[in-house]
Image (cartoon, rainbow, N blue to C red):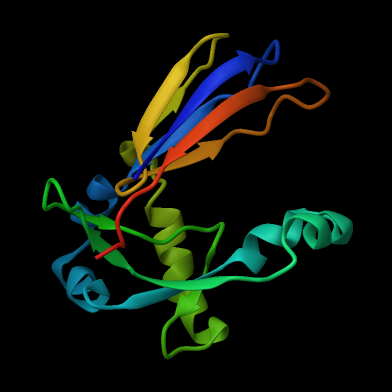
Length: 163
């Protein structure tokens, strides 16, 4: 449903987080694209997120690979608004399509959903707390603080099945 991050230690520069409204991303699409996407299902795989991990880390932490199917366009259960519900970290293809067939449309959606007009950049301070709704918001930590530490405590709240 939602996640919270509490900043415990921040680097002397960088380490911001970008948040992107998936309501705005969906609403900015053309009517034709909305018709195409409504009813489509995306396949999400844990293996896609693992490409940045070492093999040893994956074996220890993730002995099994997981796949889940979710609607490409999700209707928020409380607001009734539609939001895009795909992401570069996990979405690999559309149901009934290969990865190669899915790639052009997914590439468009991945670029579209993080356009500057849909995002805000949060600058952390020690003690800052961010709380966002995972059903309609994406977050992206900016990894631009090489050689320094960023320590966050995260809480994620259980939610409902995407519809």
